[in-house]
Structure formats: C-alpha cells, structure tokens
Image (tube, one colour):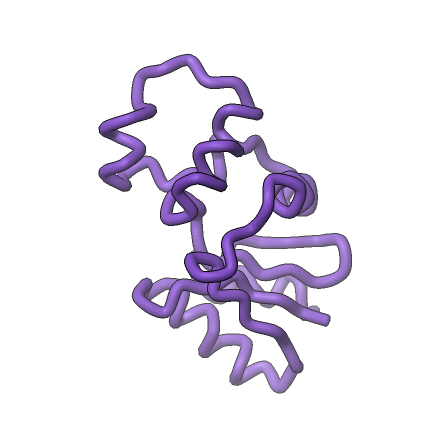
Amino acid sequence: MIKIYHNPRCRKSREGLEFLENSGESFEVVRYLEEIPSREELETLIGYLGISPEALVRKNEAVWKEQFKGKSLTDSEIIDAMVQYPKLIERPIIVKDNKAVIGRPADKISILLG
C-alpha cells in the first residue's frame, strides 16, 4: 500500500497528491499535521528515505529559525522537534513497501511506482 504524508495547504504536497491520483494506484492519505507521526514512525520514514533527520526538516519555518537554527542538535533532538512541531517535516513524503521519497518535485514519486 502506498501512503502519502500530506499537508493540503502546501502546493507541492497537493501536486504530489495529484500525481498519485493520476497514477491509478491506490493509496492512503495521512494528514500529518492532524495525525502527527510518532517518534518511531519518523525514525522509520527517515530510514526508508535514507537521509539524516536534519535533511527532513523544513529550515525556512519560523519555529526552526526561532528555536533551533544555529544550535548543535543530535539526531534524536531533531526528531523530537519534528514530533513537537510537525510543520517542520518536509512534504510530501510518499512511502511504498520499505522505500520512500520526498515528492518535490512530484515526478520524483515515479521512482516508487515504476
């Protein structure tokens, strides 16, 4: 089953959702600002993405700039920040099996579907 971690207020996330809708694949939508991923879920996603926790952070968000920018944070502290402030999580994240991509731009999603 394909899953998309989606924020309907984000244009790039909407483009990713539209890409999946046009693919003909069935998928589940997780509105991650409402259904906040747990620490364990974020750790799993980061593993599937093959990136560092910091690479999943939206560094232009005000909360990042105000509370975290310039600080030396451990991976664990960065994950805690994303759990506390899910708006920091880059989007959209598309998961299929044990692989994931950040769908920016949306055509990156085709890597999982092919």
